[in-house]
Image 1: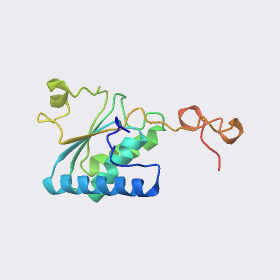
Image 2: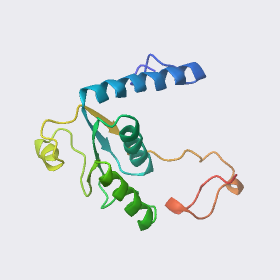
Image 3: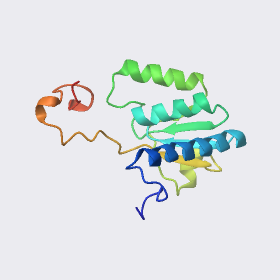
Length: 152
């Protein structure tokens, strides 16, 4: 718990999860009121979802999303990526692809048109489903990312 960014919250229990959601809401509301800038690192489904949710509920937050891949939603079909990219463009979320995250580099910040850096950064890379513990017969053989999705 000492290394956690949320050491004051115990998410093993519903009350801890509720407090975490409430803390994040207040943080985002403050960013909205300040018309702050926000960088989302990672344009997989979690990064895209987070960026679009923030834009929808807190439209005064200025959002930028980046990814090292050439487009958003890497393993998903082109039609899904095109749809999401068109939506993000329409609502004013700036997108930068083929772009490696390097917060210590001034050139990085200039490249993504944020020379004064972001007020807040959300790192949405390296996130994947944790279903390795499930019996093989409960997982799909095919699907995005090579399968391994849980059957209902």
